[in-house]
Length: 123
Picture 1 (cartoon, rainbow, N blue to C red):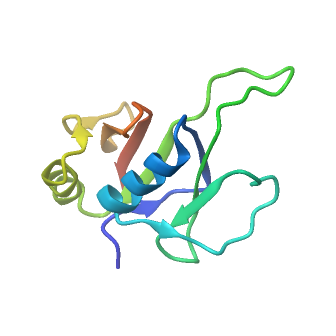
Picture 2 (cartoon, rainbow, N blue to C red; picture 1 turned 90 degrees about the vertical axis):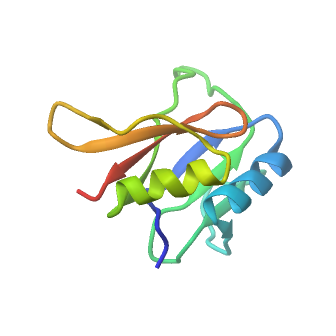
Picture 3 (spheres, helix red, strand yellow; picture 1 turned 180 degrees about the vertical axis):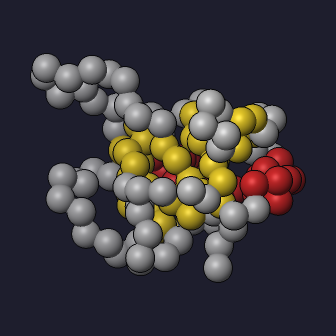
């Protein structure tokens, strides 16, 4: 079982898909997956198990009539401190553990290109 679980299918815009793919595989232990997703042309699909969400890495784009703001990608873990320590040991830029207004503990990390990803305790 993986320490991190992708919360849902997330799209992350990156400038260098090959470098970002290598980073997510090395740092988070994800792997390329054979999951077929509609509208994923030109994207790399990463995951850890077939029964959870996927991470799509693809080019930046803003379809007409939409905002350039993307939702923050999210992972869950049942061992928040252990997950943070693991990521920091792999050279990942991870912030301190915080608590939101609902009492949920989480921390934010940044990928190779500075995209924010939230790591949250299991709901």
